[in-house]
Length: 194
Image (cartoon, rainbow, N blue to C red; front, side, top):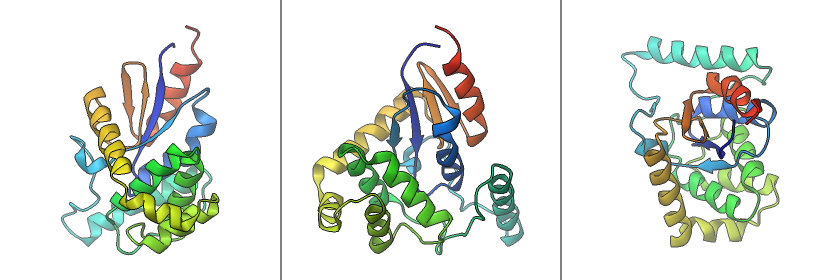
């Protein structure tokens, strides 16, 4: 299938983490990673609205079982979870601007969901940056830059306008496939001859 492809994510989302660990192998060809703020999307899962602790634990169990099924290491839940990901998403936006977007996103997701470190804490963001050779002072400066904030807002608004309703999502041309379970379908669509 012809048309541009893109992978949309927010670092607070454990399902986006599951997708991020697989998207490079499942979705063929160029597929830029686009950091967006999921809280601005129309149907975004907040991971907060559980009736009781039993419901929350059941939802976490689904994600943990899915991680095992796709061969990932054990999920370690960050504390607090969910966490405010805005500063981490600014870092992801900056990383994309300097050609380290995928490396940073993977390092940050692993910090959060394999290491159990909330990305609302700057030190945890800096550790993810260090894993892909981003200078800590440059990264901290980028977190305060208006241009980085504007780019994150622009990407989020554009994703919303294109029909991205939650993360993870893969856009192929005009079609948006939402959810980690849609990766194989996205890969099959991209592999189809034009």
